[in-house]
Length: 231
Ligand SMILES: Cc1ncc(COP(=O)(O)O)c(C=O)c1O
Image (tube, rainbow, N blue to C red; front, side, top):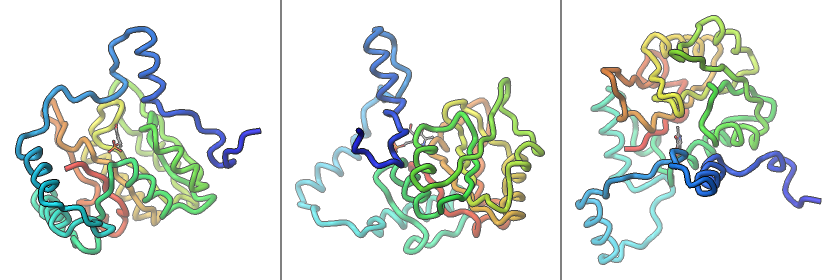
């Protein structure tokens, strides 16, 4: 009998492991995960080398170094006009997966409902299930992955705790429109629901589209608990 805890017993491996194994097996081109085809910028490499030489090897504060948090707050102000307190409203994590997992574990009680747009990034549903939450899916459909306002509204209920919005969206590439985000903002405020946004591709926007941050919509600062971005 498996020694794994019941809450993880339904989980398989990650989509990355599965697709990479298949690509290797069939000698296929692997589009299943990101493989940067460019080097890291020299100034970054130099800074890392310098930090090693300078023995910068003490524990960082749990929520990240102050200079980094201040730089993130300045970016939020410049890019989205958002005033964010670098000491109390920003936490630096080791990648987005950790941030998403920690935020969901910190917000979702067993039995709470979490609205997700499917197809969804691989780690969302396991994180919701680990927290004992119940996923409620809005299925994005081709050709344009547009959101039907009534269909989305029907998923909200007094049991809804969280909605997870990933824009620009992996895997469809959908960039949520201003109108769609305004509708989500209205629903969050109407049902007192927290929005968690995964905006890690905020700078990868093509075809003249514009990325909008849900946190910048009127009244949303109080309803956003986690905005994941990769600077
Ligand atoms: C939408 C989305 N969120 C989160 C992640 C995970 O990011 P990280 O590698 O920083 O944990 C990915 C990685 O592909 C992603 O596509």
